[in-house]
Each structure stands twice: as C-alpha cells, then as structure tokens.
Length: 126
Image 1 (cartoon, helix red, strand yellow):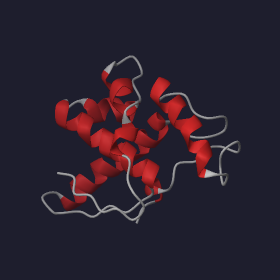
Image 2 (spheres, rainbow, N blue to C red; image 1 turned 180 degrees about the vertical axis):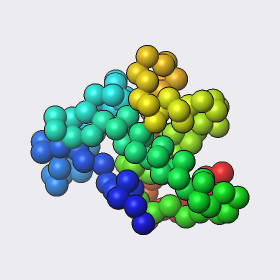
Image 3 (tube, rainbow, N blue to C red; image 1 turned 120 degrees about the horizontal axis):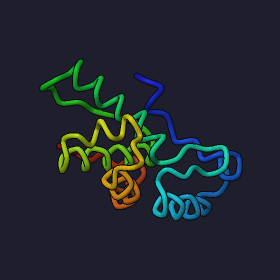
Image 4 (tube, rainbow, N blue to C red; image 1 turned 120 degrees about the vertical axis):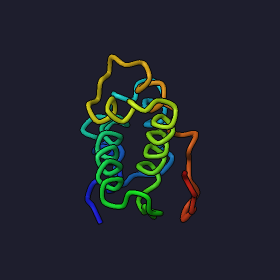
C-alpha cells in the first residue's frame, strides 16, 4: 500500500460534488495537463507521483505480475504514463521531472481520458 495511489484531489470547487462536474475538469486536462483546477491536482501532478510508484514497483517486484488498485482518474493517468513509456523509454524521466518543455509529456497526458475505466473494472496492462 502506498499513499501515492490515492484519488486525485480536484480542489474545493469540485471535490465531493456531482460527478457531472468532472467533465469540466477533463476539458481542462485535455487543454493543458499541467493546469490544475483551483486548489487541486493537475494531470501532471498525479502522473509525477505515479511515475514514482512505477519506479519503486519495478525495483521491488521486477519480473513479477503486479496488481495495482486505485481510483479511476489516477489509474487512467497511470495507463497514459505507461503508454507514453512504451513509445518513448525516456518518458518516465520526463514525467517524474515534469519537464513541460517536452512536447511528449503534454500530448500523452492530455489524452488520459481515452483510458477511462468502468466502476470496479479490472484491466490487464502489459
């Protein structure tokens, strides 16, 4: 268990409100994954903490199958990070360091919604 897998904090304007409000946040995410809702976490913030989880998990469980349980938004951001890492091996370094000047990071992170999950969905990611 690790605190880095916690739910994304959407900020006081969205937190614990109707799920209908999430569309507003996701529009911001798509436009600029480095822009956080007021007082909340951006996609890049979440991706950075999840990149750390990926590094430490790989070190601790290298070569093993791993089950990661978290919330929807962090998991789809996590899958976007994995997708970027498959296409570009240096991607994890860019995410961990939040190098905004790289065009790869925003273009991959802004697409995290394409990995949307259903409630209680299990998904194999290799």
